[in-house]
Image (cartoon, rainbow, N blue to C red):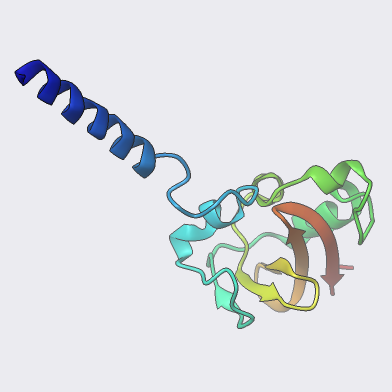
Length: 140
C-alpha cells in the first residue's frame, strides 16, 4: 500500500512540475511576451508602455533599418520575416524603449528611441511573434 501511495504522489509531483515549467504561462509568441515580461507589459494594451531606459545610438538604429532589415518596411515572404523580437533586440543590443499593441495591424509594436533624442526612433511591428513591418523616423 505504501509503495502505491508513494508512486501516486510521485506521479502527481511530476505532472505539477510539468504544468509549472515551460514558458511561464505567457503563451508561445515567438519570444515577445517572455522577453518583455520583466517590464510587466499588458501585451494587448494600445497605450504606450515604457520599457528599457537604455537607448541605442543613431548609428545602430540606422544600420538596423538600412542593412539588417535590408532597407525594407514590409517583410512578408522575406528572410527577415522570420526574425523575432529577440533577434532584433540582439542585433540592436538593448531592449526596446516602449511597447504598445497596434489594434489596426493586430501587431505588437516595439519602439527604440535614439539615445538623447526622443524624436528619432525605429518602430518595429511583430505579428504572431515574427517581424512584419518597420518604420524609421529622423534616423537620416
